[in-house]
Length: 426
Ligand SMILES: *Cc1c(COP(=O)(O)O)cnc(C)c1O
Image (cartoon, rainbow, N blue to C red; front, side):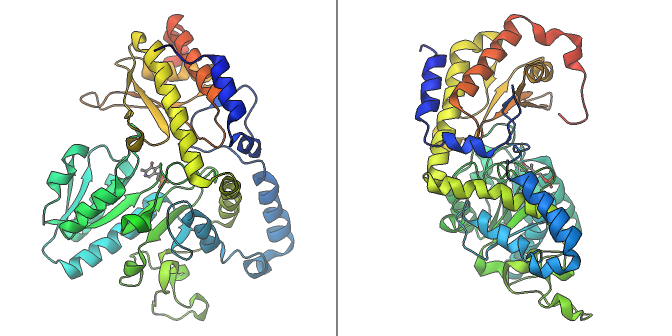
């Protein structure tokens, strides 16, 4: 295979029907940003919109803005915009809190439902490379409620789905490898043994095609600051299958989830529907930023919608892997991301037995921003992770990223000691 040329990549950019979307984002000069799976890029509209919320809505209109600027309704309004990206309907999604906290809410609700319907079940099943915070939250809930968290390898999930499983809790697209589960097949398999499914869409919403209702999923959570471009610490989201929403309280029964918060009654009465998945007062400025970030997807809808975005994402990750296969295998890299389109998300992860952190740092110094995820020193290798956000990454960007990686290796630049100093956030 001959590697695709720069000219070929530039021509793909010229023909790209989604190319105009890039102009919605504030990409710094000289930077190729391949970390939108960790922190999405600033949309150009966000600073003005947030400044308006600060100076006008907060500064001038003060407390009136809860009503006049729609602050109180923002979690549901933002939720409706997210719903369109994940196969949910209006009023099924709420933007609130963090992914970790939302996972606690939905997992707890799922365990309550399981307890009522199948009291003998006592296992939460997940896979051992799931994102740690998901496993940590599940571990604590299992301790609290006398369940056991069972972790198996991804390819052993179907075998492990036994009658004792109450909840199958998975992240749809793996944060390390970019491998994607078949949501419908696994949800069907869970239902076949009477288990509920909880899906984390942190690396899926706005990145791949998700259809929660078609998959018959039970619960889902996801992240606002990755592919949704809501800004650092943006609120996360929750979706609950409407057949479950009103069955149980979620455990964080704050007043924003109450049926009538401004009646200030001493007893808790949950609101109907997804509203009950809110806890307390939500971060309005962050919600405003997330709301604005999501507007980019309204533009996507005019250009073919998520299927068009997914098509470009697959072309970008495919190109990245082709370039790696033709030029970088000789430098000791492996590819951890699945080759099959239906099995991968919107990132490419490379493996290397040594120097992965320093190589990523050397690339960042050249303006190519990816990130590093440590392995476990055993089966799991260190990972160099490159998120290819089709909203603002182009084909020539991918070509230049791989060229830079090749140069970092060929010149041994990465071996300079300044690149091996570990920072707190990798
Ligand atoms: C990014 C990510 C999170 C982040 O959780 P926070 O509560 O926002 O820190 C959780 N789960 C997965 C799978 C993630 O990728």
